[in-house]
Amino acid sequence: MGLNAMDSQAFTGIGQPRVRGPGIKVGDVWLVILSLVSSFVLLGGLIGLLLAFDGQPIFDSGVVTLNTLVAIITTGYRASITHVLGFVVSQSKWVAFANGRRRLLDLDRIESAGQGPLGSMLLLFNTKVKGIGIIRFGALLTVVSIAIDPFAQQLLQYRQTTSFIRDASGRTTIARAGRYSRGSEARLTLAQIQFVEGNSTSLYGPATNIPIITDADFSMQSAMMYGLIQPLAAVSQQANFSCPSGNCTYPEFASLAVCSACADISNLITIDQVSSGSRMNISLDRTVTPPSADRTTITRYSLPNDLRLDNSLLLSLRGTTNASRSLAFPGLETLIWSQTILRHPPSTNTTYLGSSLSAVTATECALYYCVKTYNTTVTNGILTSSASPMKVDRDPSSWELRSFSNSPAPTLPATRQKDISYHPRFSFPLRTDLSLGGYNISQAAVNSISHMIQRTLASCTAVTRNCTTTLEAVADNWAPLNGFYMTVRNEVQFEPSVAGVFWNGDINSTFESVAESLSNAIRSGGDADGQETVEGQVGVLIVRYQVDWWWIILHGAVVVGVLVMMVWVLIKTGHDVPVWGSSTLAVLKKGEEAGALLGGAERVEEMEDRAREVEVVLFGGERLGGRVGERESDEELWRR
Image (cartoon, rainbow, N blue to C red; front, side):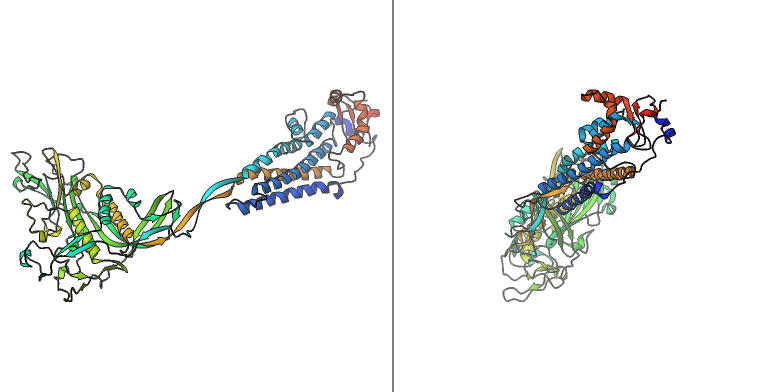
């Protein structure tokens, strides 16, 4: 009478009763457990090592490198994990053949998987081995573990970083100024001078005599021109700094500087129609023909400071050194220059202009002394700086008149007592420094810078070109219009030269560039007794370790997977399956009992063919043997 696997339980009375095995003893699995614990310890050690050196400079003791240490730990980790994997996969074959019929060939296939990646890969793709999902998982871990070493090699990456250290040579510096005193002034006469407002011819000697002449330092003059034609980004790079490595940082510092401010005052414009005979006849040859003979009126735009713009002009300018005459900055005590600009849109290029108020804009920009705080870095040789004005007031006890050649200090008109603008008469008396919260600028510097800016940003535009005498040739004594831009007979005419810059460029940006450029000159000049500098830190390139942690996920996944496999195998082994693992002796023991099933087969191929047709149960209540699909007789039953 034949049996199949489903009938096996019907013969428990005939067969011998189930015999419980000896169970799991520590001595059977201690080496495997030790290997598993070692895997966790080595993985933890690898993670700790990487954490310790992540972001640190390259380590090289001269004997061993960090890469070598990582390779040693990884090798130990893989050896431990491979040993555990080999055991759990091999032990799984005994579990698989307990309490159920299975092809004898499956025993060989699972054993091959426990011997290495190739056998594991063959098992993964062998669809004829059924019901071994957890064993396939172990085979997958074995195959994946091949990548442990390559993944470990990707853990350590390198990156170049810049570290900033103190420059022992003292060459990492940037200029600042606590006091500026460059510039010259010459007092040409000691004749008795009446420092009063009024007609210059009654003041002293010949009317053409100018008691004081000034000249700004040439670096300041160059800075003025550079700021007018270059954008702020280019001007910023002209700051005087030294950075030997091309990468440096500097501590925040304060310095005497020049600031700028601009305001839109278009809301102050008034518009009216006036007789064409009232047009501003200020072309270079002073003969402008009205745009058409039949035009009797023209449109005129005006501001409260008497600056006007009519149909003959594209742009008109009025500058002043007197804060009380400024429309937007009347209370600025350190004002150097305030520039008011009326202009049509830059796209306009005809002599006769329309009468739309919205087409004309009015802007006022100021340059004034201030103190700025700077935050500066240099990266790859490019300076990046942010500056902000400090809230520092003008010291009321500064800019005081003092005696000259044993003569008492003169008495000036009230409007000139604190005036810091250049004037050929009222700048003659000696003064103390102009001070802003302890940051000082000398009288020679104040007068020469003021005179330079007046000559650069303003021009005498009177029709007769008789702007009083040379004694009064300063901007505030000229007519309200001291600059223009226009077209005459399709040709561009303008005075002064800077009017072309204001017409074609952005006014706000231009004044920002000029202020920055003048500040650079002040900082570079420092005090005439010696340039002041701030010492910074020099950047040095350091190659550091960078751990790419994604690559260690495989290590963690494998060891956790092996732990799961180990627990499953030990639970399934229990008291019914002996702990034989990959023992060859265990195979021989079972071979003695099952050898008859392979009788007559000598070659591996023959044994595989026989094993493919035979199903067995190696452990459990019954031990069955026979051909696949056949029913065995009672006499063919194997009993423990």
